Image (cartoon, rainbow, N blue to C red; front, side, top):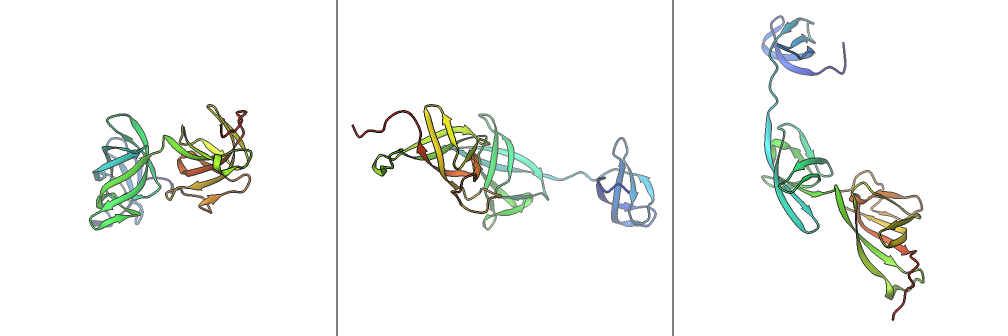
Length: 215
């Protein structure tokens, strides 16, 4: 039996005409051909349609929010940290779930049928907040800036980057609460790496040729 074949719950005319049993879909074209996994009876029948629900999505990016809707299988479990494409009035965006609004509040995960609003942030292109220290180490000359980069742009602790007019070496990375797959919230060992959409703040050392001066 093909373990990767689609399986559905259907009545079997041979062994279970009054209740569903698990069937393997042998051929989905035309009137689908299926085989009962209980008695191996092969027969043709219609397949049940997957029920979908339409849900409101709020996408936040750079302090602004847009609202759209998405369709999802009713029994699909949604969870914080998951990403999906959503078509907004402005553009097709990659969004990451930050919170799920259900009847009794907010949840980290829930079936789509129970979700009222999907709260997300855009992660296709992101703004990364940066605290930049001068080479001299004088903290009173530390400055902040924002970098506009693709969400999948990678920063590595100990490596030097040049973006626009800025050249800097990454010294530390603080991660967002919805970042997944990291062992720690703060990354500060050489070789530690994270993509821009997972980063709350970068701490870097200035490597540009422009001299730091209080004048």
